[in-house]
Amino acid sequence: MKMKEWQTIYNARLTNAEQAINRIQSGHKVFLAPFCNEPQTLVEELVQQKRRLQDVFLYNLVIGSPCLYADPDCHSHFKIRTFLSSSLLKSAFLNQVCDYVPVNLSEIPHWIHQENIDIALIQVSPPNDEGYCNLGISVDAVQTLIEQATVVIAQVNNQLPLTYGDTLVHVSEIDHFVVSNRPLLSVPDGKPSDEELTIGKYVAELIPDYATIQVGIGKIAKSVLLSLTSKKGLGVHSGSITDPVTELIDLGVITNERKEINPYKTVCATLTGTETLYKYAHQNPNIQLFPTDYTHNAAIISKISNFHSINSALEVDIFGQINAEQVSSYPVAGVGGQMDFIHGARLSQGGKAIIALPSTAKKGTESRIKIKLPYVTSIKSEIDYVVTEYGIAKLFGKSLTERAKALIHIAHPDFREELSHEFEQSLSVKA
Image (cartoon, rainbow, N blue to C red; front, side, top):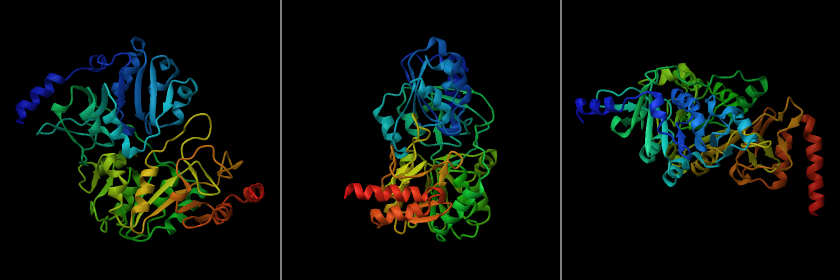
């Protein structure tokens, strides 16, 4: 398409936030671009117009989002359906206007194909000379969303980095453009505790040189990355990457040189960090973003040898069942990509599925290693290792009794006797 042709389309579809959000009506299904690419100008206008709306379903993945639509003033207008929850949604859960959709991230594009999404709210860069906008910091399921939604409304933000991979969308695929240049949402790194740093060092012991890794977000993930500085030739194929990844690239630790697919490229679906990360990824061909049905696809991951998935959890039982979603009356996280990457690691030649978590919660008053879990995200047969600040429990190929002993051994010392006693009691009951 010639420049004059796409510019005519773009100019004809330029509007303001108020007029664009007027397309949303009561009962509509609205999908928000995930994570830090959630378009805040459009969301703010949606909240501003809430009083004319009833039963608008908002689908989201909220890490990095301020969740403005979860304010109590919005409860009678929006019904939130989240694929990956947050404590910011607590009041909406308690008021029964928010619910959790347990879908693996790899399957969200498939889910979108099955749903009738009325409106997609996304964020893009200004168009280039050929009429293509860039999705910037998050691809995830947005390409499928653009294809399937009845109406696509894009916030055009020149603060977005121009990234490589499957990040381009032509202006002809978008129905309305709202120009709003503003700082991007970010997820700053927290400072890991001494216990978390110890966990990171134990995890690093399990990762050989030239392995390919997937690491989530949060302080344990950061601790793992900080502990990898002595490694050689690591690859990254992950759901998200964070600021510390850039430091490992600069140190020559992450080179992606042994990856059988996307060699020499750091691959992810989203950038979850700060402006430092966004600037690093800007026009950097060695960092590439793809949809989750590629990045999280176990069949794709299986082609990468020595793939190590490293995920955190809320709790683990003494047999290796993992809870990464819920600890009270509402979800605080979600299945996310955990099972996707665990499956991929198990199919990878030399791969490992690793779960890392602190041994205690609630300021040391509660063990995260339990006799039994009320919620299970990942099943015991899928996990190779569980790591706490007290060491590494190898689970693959172990009997239930061997698993229990290994996990009790890495529990906090204050809880080991109690856990052992409860386990012995459970054996006598079975007998």
